[in-house]
Image 1 (tube, rainbow, N blue to C red):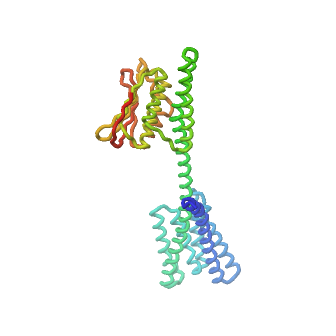
Image 2 (cartoon, rainbow, N blue to C red):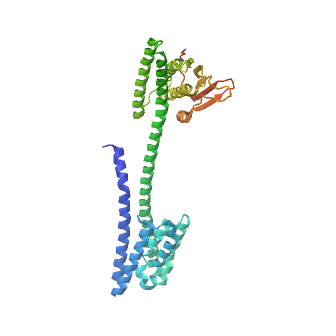
Image 3 (tube, rainbow, N blue to C red):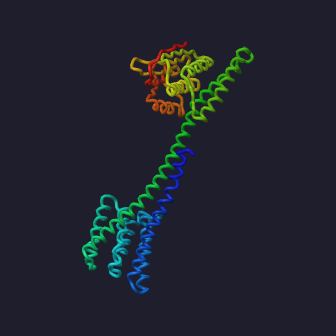
Length: 383
């Protein structure tokens, strides 16, 4: 069985186990205190009164440290009431009640913020000595009562915090699972936009071109439809990649494909890749940059010329620039595109320590630049 699955199942069982421990510890304190009170006092009324008070204290204990707790807005008053019910019975039950304040001290540790919780805890533990001395106990008995209160309080605090940590662990695991699901949804939508957006744009473009050519140039129309079929098959492959999360793209292949699509749209293209070998992850990211940039040119640009250039300097910094002359005369650009394209590219480049920039140079050209680092390798040039 997978070790991770075993760990997840163990974590799922941890919360009910720790809560069970809390319940058993609190019930054990109640039973031990009730037995001591009944055994050390005569008279049914006296014994019943002690048991009833201990039941009230058990309720307070569950409300402050158990699995089912009071609302936080009540804690100040419920803690005060817990203290009154803890110490007031000393007037009736004297020495047999000296072990009870430990559970109250543990509730103080849980509820009162640090460092005041520990200060009050220390005061309650130290206060056992004069309290027991006033009831006629010896110094040894008073010291023993203080130690008993400290141990009881720490046990209550420890088991309750263990259950809290288990609950926090389960909540954290749930949150991580939800975040992983959100990230997978984001990846799917991003890949769907980046991969299929381009393919469908080119398919639509080639179909329009074939429709115009079917009567005048049937051979060319047939060729365009053949390329369209290739693009459809590529789109089907992209869908399989998206569903598996294993998107394999190449800057060189994508640049060739982009050049073909642009030429089919009547846009002259110049491709110059002088970056050589690229790691698969970086290669896929830069290919996605080209695909998104060319999709925007086809969808939103009035471009007649487009350039795709990649360069690597001596320091190993790689720059990819996709530019087109699709800026309108009023200075606005249609090459920038809309939707999540630029945002998706920015996220992808950040994952490979890169950055994205867009620029209009004032002469009618729009440039989209991606800059990152890559290992040195020989270059290749296309035209």
